[in-house]
Length: 464
Image (cartoon, rainbow, N blue to C red; front, side, top):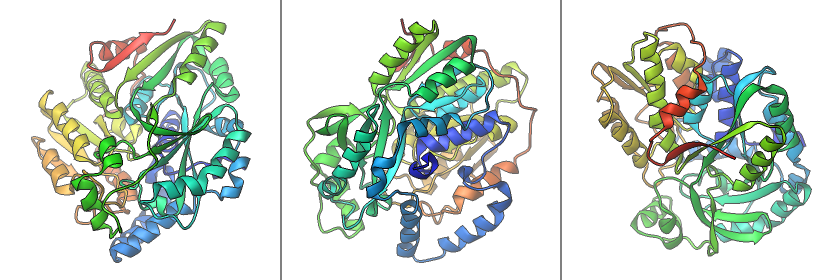
């Protein structure tokens, strides 16, 4: 099976690889990389029509768009790790790089890598697999229906671990007809090794990106764990033990129950989407010693932890180069574009999702930095009124902290979180912001290391 057919286009890792690789090719990323810019206007109109349909119809269309990307269960054993890795490295220009990042997905890291003229190779990819007859709130049913497909995938790929994830809070529309198989490399695949050997500049730096976030898991087989729930505003305890917010969500969606009954966890593991399995780090260390490369580890405890540090680094770089530092661009999940941020002289602050916790992290950053004249907020629409989702009006109130311009950009607040046209409209809106300067020369990696020194819950250190 071709790698591009087996990997989800709507996932964090693939979306971030698209954004960064296009930046390194001198391109921005219209429609989160799904369409050429010429198709944005008609697609925006088409999706705008979808916004006017009844909510149940919108949800079915959104769910179908994801289901169409999923592979049949009978073909899970045809997925090949080597092809996935070749597909990832094939996104990037074949030239020398001063730094290469490998590991956890992270939107702030995309901006850091762009500033350093560096690529990033993910440990984790999402392979969506079709299945039928399982309600979104039936975690045990999902595991039972998909276990054999997971075993077939692992039997064909001994260098992968499978983190089978089921989240009826944030992903309930998608998981109505598919299973989330997040696969993680246990060691550097050959395509990654070749990419590093051939393209890391002499004296260059290899960096392992290690998000240490963990989540309760249930062991299914060797290299196979099941994760119920995921990072968001609902806690692991709420997923497994229930509570008022869970009951309210289930009532809102007409579920026959008011709590979930997932398989009992028997341990914890790296969070399926964001966490790093340290098997890969151990293999990277051995690889670096063998080839006499310097290996550093960039560690942080949760994905958004990097965002303030990267924002401060970019703001300081702007000031040093005489560019105004009064524009902030708040990004959301896959709505990120390093080229547009640099073109407009906007300081990037990436938020994981549109939740109140993520908004609170942005508020905390604004409390501790010099005020911005302009704040533009992008909101990723995932179609679900999930636990802890911050209403568009709350995000608008945060944007209003700007001294001059504080707006939701490309967002129809009345339709959020089902404003699917916003996935296209946001790029169009960014394109209308005035250019402030030509794209700058890359930053020196020492400046990045210094910017992360002394940060709470972040370390950048040498791996011996």
